[in-house]
Image 1 (cartoon, rainbow, N blue to C red):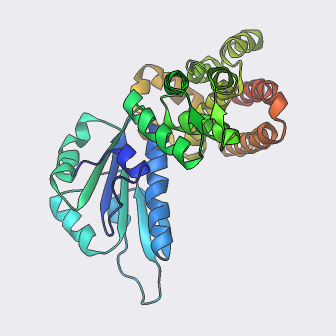
Image 2 (spheres, one colour; image 1 turned 90 degrees about the vertical axis):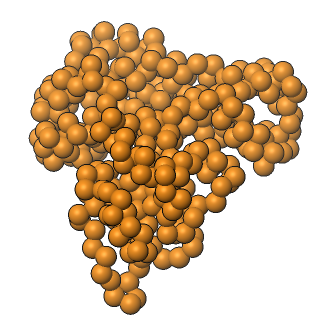
Length: 312
């Protein structure tokens, strides 16, 4: 059946035992949040092992009496059918399929929607109504009060991508048991987040141009967080792909215009450079967390070092 991701996050609907989940859409940060919500639910219910596999054919259902149950994370729906779903349900394991929107998965999505024992969760950017529902829950839980005008200002200011929406809500925690006003909102919540994702595709320009682009687009901590998150996502796609075909399969469909650029970038990385990239990511993330006042400068330093690594 079709289930709203917001109904899961707001606990309007309870995650069912022994269900099979299909997470789709194009908002990867919301997909990730729903995936972790499902995993946390079952791990709190009992002893589960997390297994990431390429496709359903890699599943091994036989286990000993004292072995843990499994939660399978599967990023490829090939081989999935109505009869296969029946087999999976009878295995008493948990299956989370993740696949961004594509015409090729329409038939599979319809199977999940029609059945009552499987969940189809489409994840897109948060609507105004979604933000209202989640914000009300957060304000009530943290005993934060707002005037009517301030509340609507907050709804409009919060990001549409879940990752950044959640980060911005976290900034409100300091107002627990207090009343928040419009001026306070302006100081802690970015009015508009956007454009920083494109910096990744400018990385082969000269350093002065890269610096100019970065300085124009990254001006506060919210934009810095989005910049680093998007970069980290693309970097891990490079690091985790064993070959060009793996990398191509992982490129999001909406980046079709940047596809050739991304492939050429991937081919510049061997295993040694992948290791260096991983170390650079970890070092930068630690620095951003420990030196918050310098985070924007640290982000620029990371960008230049990444460009140096790519072109070395």
